[in-house]
Image (tube, rainbow, N blue to C red; front, top):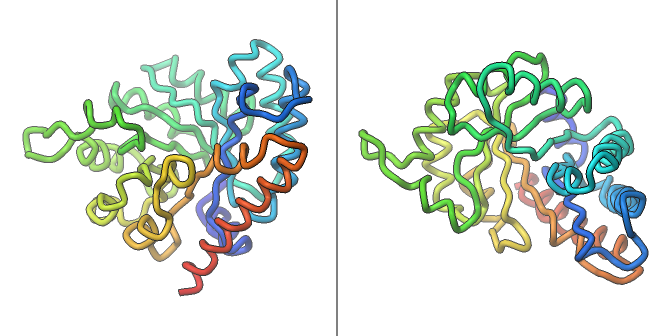
Length: 268
């Protein structure tokens, strides 16, 4: 999917909501056991949120944990999403040379995702293979929403800049705003203003709104650009809004509420 089409989808939906499809059997309602149950749960969530979501982001770990059947569920989930939504393989891959090439082939060709999350720690030659696929996107980890982000991402480099800023500057030069995004967590909204000075035109994938307590209004205050430039992800707050038989209706209500807030922000 190219940038123009992604922007069109956001405008059509009036929303830049990304729904994370992270099916955890321990949190799902009763009656959705095994691989078939997870697929049924995913389909119900997609049906409930389709009008409000611009993107879907399956976290690959929840499918790998099921073994071979999990990969079948992942493929079937992607098929069910269909056209009209941006898709993100949340795999956080990153390795050198042929290994990265095979990771890219897995998610861009075998499963036909629009994008994949990548860890940049090993440098440019670990990311470049992902950038060689036309109209596919690399979503590079920059400033994450977890508490452990402080362990490395704020260490200052030789220019007295935190490491996450170095990642932004360096990785922005590997690709373009047409094929590269960055993960920036919603739990640190005060950082968005400075981040936008480094990558004013890139899309940002923003986890941490919802269950992790990030503020959508604060993220948008500093993070929006002329093309919106944000995909704000919510996973647990939508998927597990209820553990009863009304889980799909509850998921729809949460997704609709977030999308309505997004629409109001866009209208301003």
